[in-house]
Amino acid sequence: MKQRKREPMQDALTEALPGEFPVDAETDRQHRLDTARWTVRQGLFTAARAAKGYGFPLEEVAAPGLNSTK
Image 1 (cartoon, rainbow, N blue to C red):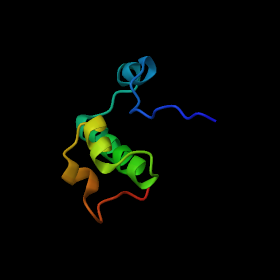
Image 2: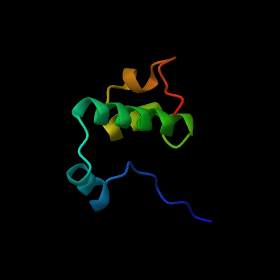
Image 3: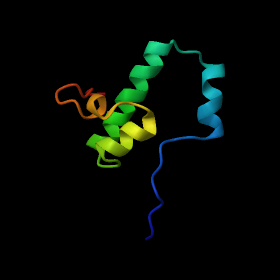
């Protein structure tokens, strides 16, 4: 079975959600960082790919001991 190329979520629903469910900037940033780290832990992206895709410095995504358990 051919696998699709994995990309960070960028679609109409993702873009529309902030207007429907407002979240403060710090919470949004933390959720995106947790998601970037999760994708690395799951083996979906390398740390470099997740950092670029989610807009974080590589050091933040790959920082040891800072990964959320969520």
